[in-house]
Length: 219
Image (cartoon, rainbow, N blue to C red):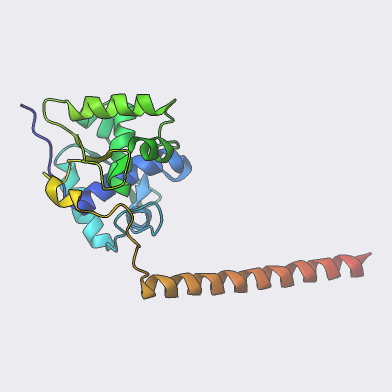
């Protein structure tokens, strides 16, 4: 029986980010460790949100190399990293896309997966998503598992098994809708970002006005 690798949450996140960015930002792929770390720590399209350091990401990369999942290349004096998931796992692109989105965003329904996979691999309909999920779940060693329906839910969610076995019974009691706690640090970061963008807009307006005035004077 083929044994799946057991990843840490950060290792799964690193692999998921590499798979995602190959499709979404091909011009900057392969990724530097700095860009890869930023992708791991994104506040959006990530569940859970992480705060990994570059050192931790490099350690995760080293561990993923043991499974032939990482390809290194050097360019512009910076080491860059790409994934080798399709060959290493011997899986089609559709399955790799589904696993990547599950690693990045946590448990999801087939409908959510179809929507969230659109930039990695567009699926024609939900039935095609379910067909690949069933194939992954029915493999000799399953890659994913169909979770019990949550109270009040009409659809099953799916979860990857690359971080080991999961406590299905504990997931049964998870509320259907949980209010995400507002992180004061995240709010502060967003306010700082808005302030920075406001300053940039002001500077750009001043530059445009100066250019406009210089053009008027030169006439």
